Image (cartoon, rainbow, N blue to C red):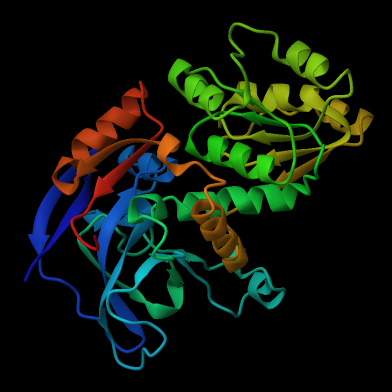
Length: 343
């Protein structure tokens, strides 16, 4: 028996190889991986920005679904054939953050799929404690969106967004669209700001108000949309300097700016506006297990329209081409890798 895996080998290159599977040890399970999604962090890996963590050659990927294939010793809570996803966080339990109850931002956090081998392979062995059950009513294809949906759930919860409050999402990539979908479930009107025409079209098809910030006056649009008050919450998901700069202009008095995107360099922020309107700036990072539970519920109930977000499904052998399609950015939102197991 062999496992097919896509190895990041550095220099913007992936190689697909057959390797022996890793047998599960005590407290571990081996998963037949059905689907693995490619996310923005994976693109950062491709660009070489995380070589110090991935340590090429390495298998990455953390948005996944599959079925339990083999149980290691001492694993009694799971059964072979059960549909699962993985919450890919390993925390130390000893640092100040963990002791304060913030294990998801552990100061020694291991992010599985970056700091240790990930899910872009047909067979993946992980600690059983990381598993999250997928109901049989939820297709595994949609189950691969549980992890990014959990990100969106966490971000919306941290924003304290309430029914009737106006929310603006800057950047309608996969996470931005998921945040919009989750925000709508709490009863908030949502406006999306996005440069890419295809992603604007997806947002429109999902029923959101959509603005092209390159062609339209975003601040004026939000002012009109909110009857002059401004948005209660702005989610900055674009990762751009322009997105950060305009975000504070869109907020109502005592509004909340939620910084979702990873900004690799310092950005200019209008601190006078923050002072003048008593604004809050909130950081958000990954999720709690409760966020995963809610993500499963939202997807299973159809409140997050998974199929509208999946642009393309490609075989594991086509991982290099899948990354190229995402880099080009045209006509895609979420790309899934079909890994060959679990269905």
